Image (tube, rainbow, N blue to C red; front, top):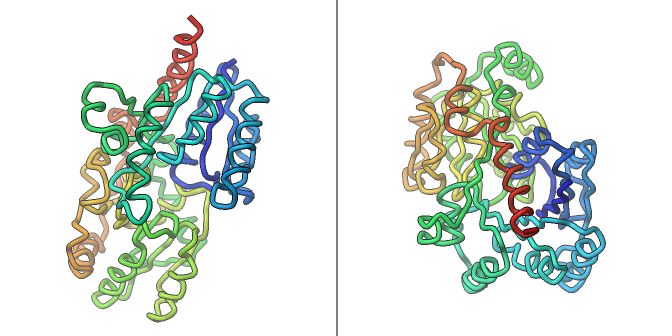
Length: 372
């Protein structure tokens, strides 16, 4: 059995974490065993799901609290548990993970980039370029979730030369297929009658651009009062968004669901999915929304065009005013037929049941190459 240590910030049900869960639930766990290091003392919403699959979850002191403790704790975990592979999913922050793994004699060291178009500000503007170089030096495998993320982290030349492995953020397509009965249950749960429901799924973080979404929603309400805005997720800016809703007297029109582990179900209850995100490595939720048969609106500048799996998605520039976004969203207020999209999702390579074999083989073959 191959032992993999995956390193990430937490397991709270965000995009990357749910992708991991999709993969591990469908993986041959007699061949591959995955444990996790999380940089938080907080117990994540989906940790128990991984523990049910046999994973062990190690907590380490975040670097922001103590870099010294962070390094020592990770070193002990790697040294004492004899992992075959370290797979860091924290982008350039994985630099220290790779160096520690190298010191511990772990031969297979993977760095996985899940971001693109990230604006570099403050000290990160100067720290990111050398961090990328160190990541490339100490990693044996360069991974990314999309073409854009591959180029952003490893460079266009490396991507074109085939040095970067792109692994699709695959989903369980059966879970997302549109279901009228699930839709009715969701709308009943949130006391939604015939309102036009605009859905947003994403953690409350500057990246997801919730404040701009609220400005769009205010314009929508000026044109049509029979609407609801469903905000799915949690995060550091949640209080700020609540305050913004209060200040604009929007409470009767906005639903906060909190962090949920049933996003596939909630998507059924929506009428359109909108996320004017500033940047994404890929943006798996756009695939999930399309798989649910939802009309989907994404930002032109922040979302890779490889998310266009169906004709359901369209892209609007963030330079367009909120009123323009509102007009485009309201084009769909009278409804549309929702069809199964699962065959299109599968053909595009985003069905986890097909894609999981690729990741399994990558783990197995990478270990074999270093054993020879």
